[in-house]
Image 1 (cartoon, rainbow, N blue to C red):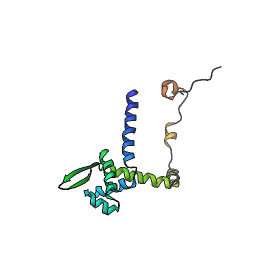
Image 2: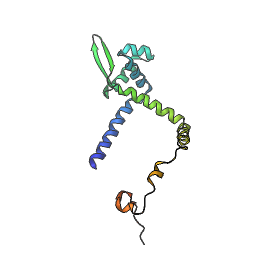
Image 3: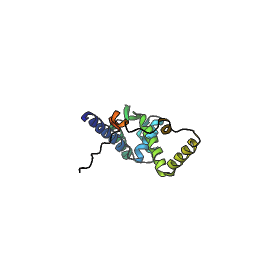
Image 4: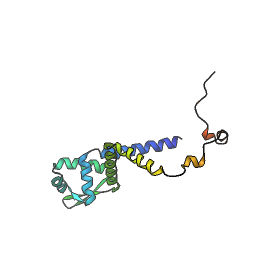
Length: 151
């Protein structure tokens, strides 16, 4: 169990490192631009209308976590998106934000699903039936884990 817990904590640590690097509108905008093509700093400065030191600082953060790589070409440094899956994270976060902004969407989907299944003859529960009293003795997973009250 310790190994599973440690693996979960490692997963959380890794995710937090990447999410904290994405915790900036400007850094996400840089990643989106780099997903289109490689850029040098002055292109990012003019496209995003921000100062060169600010863009360079954000590129350092993205490079430190491994989302961006760089290569010197003469006097310029060309920046490349090193992990294209980062764009999917941005898209997924946008989708989550959209759903959070529209909480009624989930209720609408549930209602639609209920209406679609209303005309069906049997539900899975009706097909399999309710468990009988003997099932708990055959399958210990069905026994409750709560202790019995003391008399």
